[in-house]
Amino acid sequence: MLKNYVNDNTAESCIEILSGVHPHHDYDGKDVNENDKHLIMSLTKQTFKGIAYTDRQYELVKNKIELYQDVLANLDIDVVKCLNTLRKELRSIDRSKWVGIREVNGVNYIVVRFSFNKKLISALESLRTSGINKLKLRDEKDTKVSYYTLSEANIYKIIEVLKDRNFTIEDNIRSQYEKIEMMMKNKKNYLPGIYGFKLKNLNDKAVDYMITDIGQEPSPENLALYKDRDALYGIEHFDQEDLESSCKNLTTLSQRIVRRDSTQVLINSSSFTINHIAESVLELNRYPLLVCLDSETELDDLTTVYHSFRNIFSNDDFCVLYRKDNDSPDNKNFNQYIKQNSLNNSLGNTSKIVYTTQDKLVKTLLKGNWRPKSALVFGCTRQVKIKTYLDELDLVMYYDTDTSPFLRNIEKI
Image (tube, rainbow, N blue to C red; front, side, top):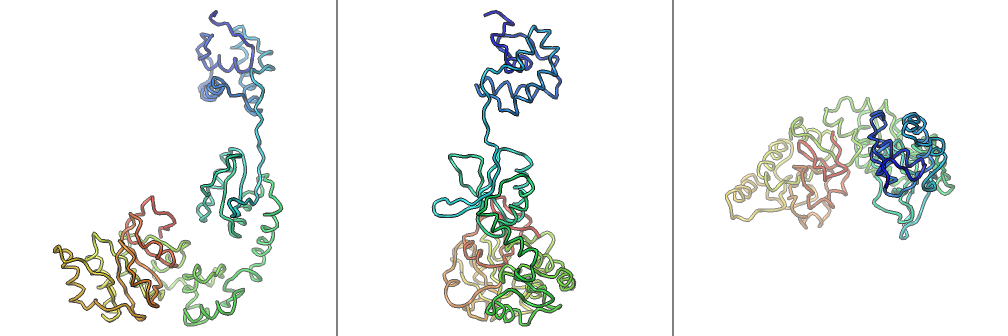
């Protein structure tokens, strides 16, 4: 075949020539601006694979051909014909954008559909900070859809992000969103919360439980305690000025715990000591406390916690739920420390500080009526085997310098 002979006067050929890698042309692309080379090469690779342009790609291609028409004309290319001729018919792209509800295996999900768009992807990714994560579900018929857990909070936040981005919002989800939006605009009438130190939009049993748990109705002195338990109580609104005033007399760590967004937090061991944590446990009335010991540092951790609380609680209030086999000096020292300090008490309803191991769920925890109000976990580098138990608590404090990338939903405070 003749060199520099182009067997089709098409837009695709022009782009392939400009890339400098046309199989039948020796032009090396020397006149093409550096800023255009990546795009032109990308389009060339696409046509080499036999993939047709989309309508938007075709408009871009024509723009580049017109930009370099003098270069192509000097190579005896019929630019006008190329501009209006394609090797392959344009690919049709479904660019529909919608939000709806779909059922998969008997479960309803929020579904968002759109073609690739960096700004939209970035907007949806921003929802992750609110705990809204895309689910690992795939639609074999349409790869452009993303699935999210169906909840009122997710409906509201997702549509708030997308409603001004030309999405079609289907009726089945729009009606729910409008109801939620009305509630958000009239919080005092709908949203469970504390308004002017009054518990509102909560059932009587829930109100009685909260007041009994805290010890008093909401007041300037205890409003921070209610906020600390908002996930447990289902409280969604606080008057911010009142809350700030209630928090200002708390320690720095206590304020950070109160203002957390997650039930699981990382307390940096480089910034705070166990004494700081003990102070917050007392200040926020977060005992009984379950202390989860790391097998590699358990004696040191047991000792540190005991020293922080021994002048606050009597020895009868401490309980260690497990012992070590006496087959090594370290294990013997661990058992001996428990005995010497009279920490070998049975678990009872009045136990304040209870130690357990991270390596297994001690069955004693599941028996009886004792329940912790918070937990302290030493280390944050691995999944602990009592995670399922800890997930039931509304405050779990991990004590370490950083979190493992494999442990999600742990908030650094």
